[in-house]
Image 1 (cartoon, one colour):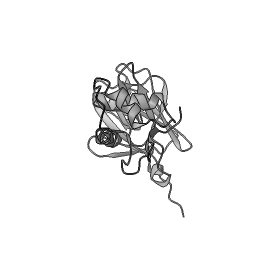
Image 2 (cartoon, rainbow, N blue to C red):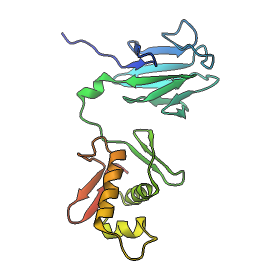
Image 3 (cartoon, helix red, strand yellow):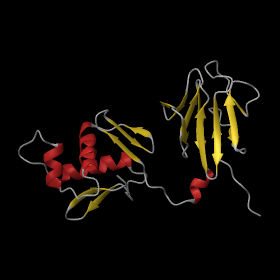
Image 4 (cartoon, helix red, strand yellow):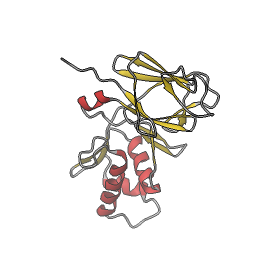
Length: 203
């Protein structure tokens, strides 16, 4: 007999809160399925909605807002395994047991050059200026092979005498540790042997 597993939240004390119902209420009121002990939490703060294999969270016009991975929620959004949900001063962690039975998901990369922000699976990633410059250039040329010479001219524009291959290889290696799920088996930033590097993914 198959045992049904449910997504769940863990609170700061490590207690698990299974999302067994299609609709789970979370807030300060004791009538909620998940009670948040915080003066900054509204009585009925947010709803957790299960739809098939997906789980969504929706703020219920709370006074202080609902936060997912540090960003205030606007409307309804889908939760992914590992997302942080902030309600009041309480930070929950969302777990999706089904994730472990699926293939490793392709990393979701967001590049916002004007804001200086990089996100992997909606989590902010901190990059050095050179790492940021490299990723922005590769993102602008997504799906195309970028040679080391091209990368050197763009990322190290201040140097006229040229850049050594090892400097580019080290920079790529450092960038992979920050954007790849497994840097030793990259999915986003691929080495095209003898040609250069290519950033993969959907535009």
